[in-house]
Image 1 (cartoon, rainbow, N blue to C red):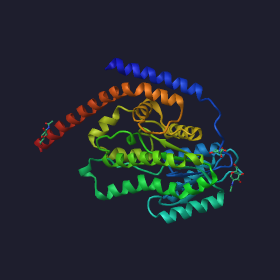
Image 2: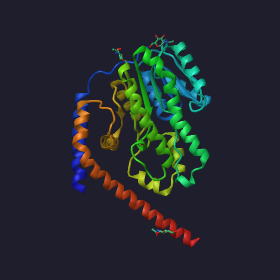
Image 3: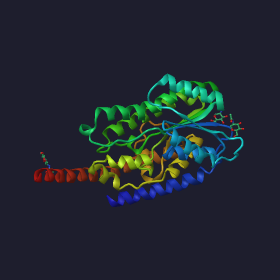
Image 4: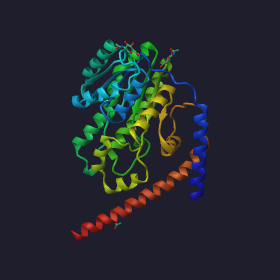
Length: 330
Ligand SMILES: *[C@@H]1O[C@H](CO)[C@@H](O)[C@H](O)[C@H]1NC(C)=O
Ligand SMILES: *[C@@H]1O[C@H](CO)[C@@H](O)[C@H](O)[C@H]1NC(C)=O
Ligand SMILES: *[C@@H]1O[C@H](CO)[C@@H](O)[C@H](O)[C@H]1NC(C)=O
């Protein structure tokens, strides 16, 4: 098992290096373009906004909390290329509730600062817990925010993008969109839904010169993650312990790069690479190199994944024993 693991890691490294050399092409500038970011007041969303401002875009941040939005706007402004010309503004809006309101607000933003060239959907959150321990309210809240909160803003901008024959849609999901994990029963379901949305939407909008990018970040060091930690069952914490935690800046930089290149998947780290290769299935092909990688590594990665799965099940059995013992001693 260890040999297979080392072999596939070595292959990953070779592929990643080749990719880096081949993809050193110049990225398009965002000068004069309008970038809208939902969930833009903190975490990955705020960092994407900073990246957009640093490449010359006019930026609209969308979130609910006005105080957080105000402080995010002043932070993003500092990164503008051209302080007189570039506009950074915020709109306080709940993207998960009233579709008509969302459409009105987004069209209003277009009339004010110009057509939306890029929509980055970062609004979302995680509540962990086994299914029987998750309240119906929390289930509905997660489904509305993570799924509808992404679908509604896209629906509101897509027909104008099609009309202009230009646009980029970014959907920020999670690695939990590629695999189910103990304690993520509801969260993971909502993120799998985003994967279906991204794949179908890509097929609908490709002829109109619109790209769709699905970002699959690992655990990221954000305020949302700190909150999520509190609700994690012991099993979930032990399973996800093996993976590291990345900074939102790194995730945001990668999102910008992949969106501007028009890549379908956006991931950071070797785990993200493994997951997207393993789970490519019927996902769009972004490059010949990516396709060759997937075809040659998928089989071996399936073996590696079984090794991980077995260790997850061992953890769960061990925790079950501990739970039984504490129950008995009570
Ligand atoms: C958008 O940004 C450009 C500079 O990149 C600027 O010239 C333009 O006036 C901005 N649009 C608005 C409505 O502020
Ligand atoms: C396609 O979209 C990109 C930006 O998203 C734009 O630069 C390019 O001109 C568009 N191509 C066509 C053929 O309209
Ligand atoms: C824990 O208890 C349940 C019954 O309450 C039992 O079915 C299960 O086998 C026990 N598991 C372990 C690992 O002891």
